[in-house]
Length: 447
Image (cartoon, rainbow, N blue to C red; front, side, top):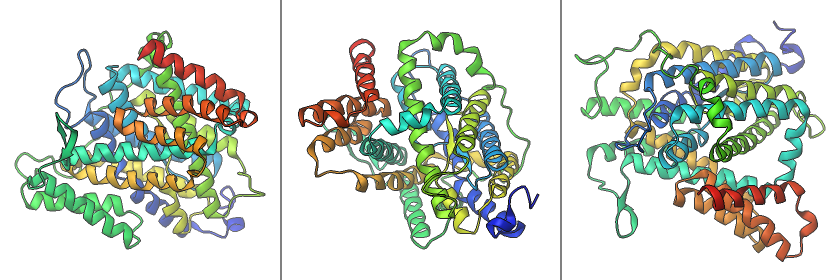
């Protein structure tokens, strides 16, 4: 084992790797509760006609299984200390754009995730993935990440009741005197405090503390009360979601609207994975000559996890930047990721906590993750108007249209236009022209 994971070469040991894996898990564990709430559209009373709600328990199990499979494959096959789980932003796109806004049922959306994962595998195996990533300007990549951050934060503010609807102005400040809203505000405050003090699992522990306060104040059911489910139980059945993606493959492949969804899943996963791999590998000192060793294996682990996750019943699985927490604790080898995956398997037996982790508890996690993702704004070249316009529209239109796909589409349409008008034709990769017509067709024929 020591030789396989190159402990001596990397200057690490079992204890250090175990603690690093545990640290990464604690930094990622919030996804176990945020993802089921998001995909099941908890807090949304009315769904589009013909659309059903995902089973929350099944999504919890699927989330843990997908995270375990992805993390373990990453550790054993690619040998990187990187944990994987259903990605934030991608789950919001799945639930709030594809299902809630476009009215596509969750089983068809899962089939879209499955197709994107299979395409990801093919692109990785053929080496095309790197070419496509390189074709998309860095400024647009930053804009996509930041826009998703604003979108996620907006959803969190809504779920918390901090932002409410208004017929005249679209949105307004919610009733801050409402007890559940006050609980969510407390959750934001405590999470900010923990993260500011350097706690690696600040988001997760913020949720735990907020849940505890909610139980003490009677705002959240007591898991040990008369109607509670206790702390430990057998994992919820994954039967309600298992295999639904495969069953809906034929109809999805024939739908022009779903191909835009698939492309969006694919693009966002591209950006998430590339950025996370480079960030974590750089912090761990694993980059060689500014290149990522075993990049193909790492990308395969990511895409394989997406396919596995779609089959069991969750949105796109991707590499988590929270893995830097484990690297900061000394993790250097793939054994760190194996430990992280093992903890996700153990977490399968703590599903009763779902009744405790309400939307008021998970809302602060959405807001904080949004803040972290919005940091990409600093990398955009705002002083160049031809770049600022498509970047700004990408970022702005995601929360305003309640659609990640729409934000990406508008930005990718405006980019070649502004660049051509500025005389920077040679800097536009041919792939961007193809995407221009693809997304233009999306608005003309499908919207």
